[in-house]
Image 1 (cartoon, rainbow, N blue to C red):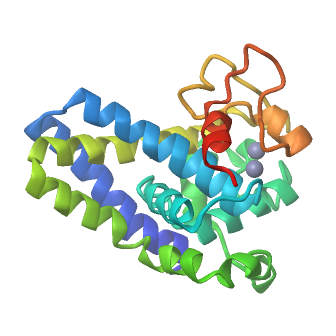
Image 2 (spheres, protein in one colour):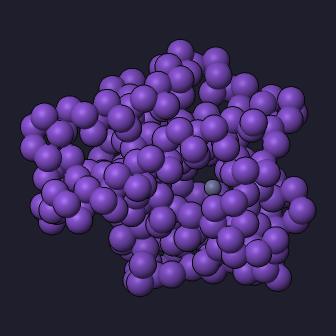
Length: 237
Ligand SMILES: [Zn+2]
Ligand SMILES: [Zn+2]
């Protein structure tokens, strides 16, 4: 079975089910949920997995690398190397048959089912050789299978409601990330921005700008709030 499918069945599916059942049975603490969504989506994915690990858009401390890598794994979509491998393929082959999650092949494929058909080739592995060479990044990648579970177990002993809130935040960020694949690319190959949703997604919705320029700052106008870039300005060396 393909690695992305194993991850989906072993990590994503059980935690997603727990998130829904847990929210219903244990309840939700709204501040914990909102802070967790911000930390996972903005710091973990938009700043960490996307702009730091995948695009190497800025330099930061080893401690921030660990923090961003850990938070990114809580989006239950893999580790920093596997995420970057897919993302680098996406940029290299945007909206072609080689794009791993293009909506060209349908909404469901783009949002989710691509993980069951995506086949990692030696050439793709070579594209993330730089990340494999870094020990901290490699360790986070290997631990990405257990970090979400460890986090939820520790949170459960602190408070079942906190645990359920973090699990729902993990599932929510997963949905936000997968929606980017199918809502900001069209089946005909167009790419879009959404200034309205941008602050919620940590700047990731300024997707057209990102494809056009590769600047670490995704904003090109005063009304396009790239909250991820605000974080980068605080943590970059
Ligand atoms: Zn990118
Ligand atoms: Zn894209």
